[in-house]
Image (cartoon, rainbow, N blue to C red):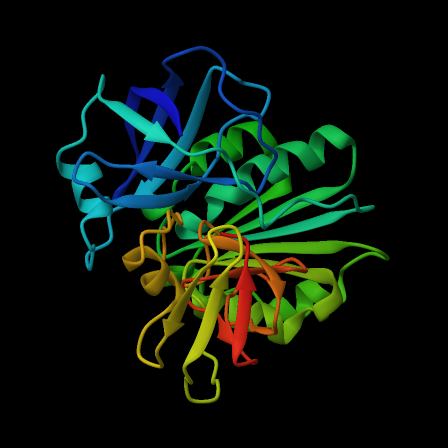
Length: 302
């Protein structure tokens, strides 16, 4: 973890605030557009937020947090109780949503989904590639960084207040894509579902707030062999691998517990994991919060 101090907190939409976290012990770890961090809150909760500042700024990180009316305690604490000067631990950045080189870009953002998209747009424009953003929200007042985007990028940015204008025609946008153009999207589930229907799958990269609904075979029990410690733990059908490892005393980090943040990644040395995450585990890895085993036995590097 990295030690930071909350240097600045600012209202950036009617229900969203921006936090600037300054490194307490020198420069912070580098990051690239699309990265997120775990923020350890003083109320013992850890939450994941996309970095939305400037990757060239090694002195501070910027994140934005919408006040979720069904908050499990994270966004509510930040909005109601967090104050400037508070010391906060922040993880090293992780990136499961990297910006890949392309001849041109279309970015789609919905509400707080602007956070990973904002530094992507900045990087794409700096590279000289044609890039544009379609930014959706119920109203302009609800859309973080709307003024910043309009002043910085002008006609490259199209802001759509859906309560008055409705959702834009994604099929029409798809028909206008140039050769090799790619689409990056982040926002609510219905927006991403519409984007997946409209844009070719090989050209659309999306990041979700919540995992997409999917069906799996019923859970079965399996055995997890912890290679380094020589211990074997039984994972029953009604418990996750993450919970069993935690109860057995293995220090596996965890964050979202929904298969979207990647903090509980473990290395698999043998056996066949059943990947149930929403981000795509690398070869030889699995996310212990949701993924299980297709084989009766997994060997993990713990």
